[in-house]
Image 1 (cartoon, rainbow, N blue to C red):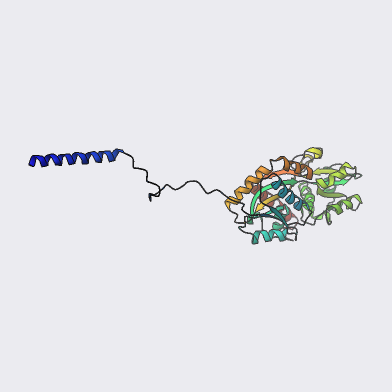
Image 2: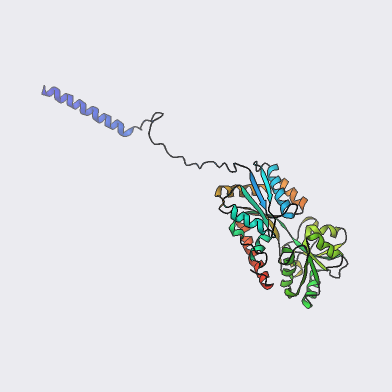
Length: 352
């Protein structure tokens, strides 16, 4: 009997050891469907659905002007190229030389990813000048991209004695009040600075310069052609048709390098020994506290837009220069411009 029990116990031990050995080498069975075993978390980020609803682009200018035109071209081209399939509405909010719309967008639309904004160089000027000052700057909203640039010129009647920029500056250095300038916007504006900055670089006493502001570039041009001003400060696109008609001569353009196309024969200020460059830009912005998702979306879409044939055709049609800068480069450019314009305003006692 004892021998039989010993044999039974030995058999049980063998079976137990075999089972343990089997468990140490085999993989655990896949739990059946509905099993409560923990599943690994997904590492994939949820796919963005932005923009889920219609969009609005506010522009702080009236209908029909240069900034409004660019905003509407931007909206149209984004749709025509199918880069953005949501409806885009353009909202005009003029007043105070862009101040009214800029302040409203910066303060009232924080975090609204479906409200965008376009503005131009006066956005910088309004923040740093004493008169017509704005409490908001590009730091109070989200820069996305610079889109286009325009250059200003100094032009004279075709019968003028001035053949180049140096001859004009020589007269100004001798007597800064001897020449009357005309521009389509007020003191401290881009047209005004286009007179002051090159003169300052040439060593002219800029506080004595006579600058007469008119209600728009058309009236300023009429003043030049009518003999009420000797030099006109204006954007090159508005002036060049009168160059082609043989009525106006351009002394120089404010761009850093010569422009292309029909403007290629116009010398820059720098070519003529005046170390001055001024660029009037128009850019695209998002609201303060814009989400990373929305900002990334627009950075991608704008980069794709400026490479399309449709956009390039609009640039040619409108007489704009391709001024595209990414968000980071745009911010750096605005910081440099702000410092430059602030120095000019200090010279004029116009700084905030």
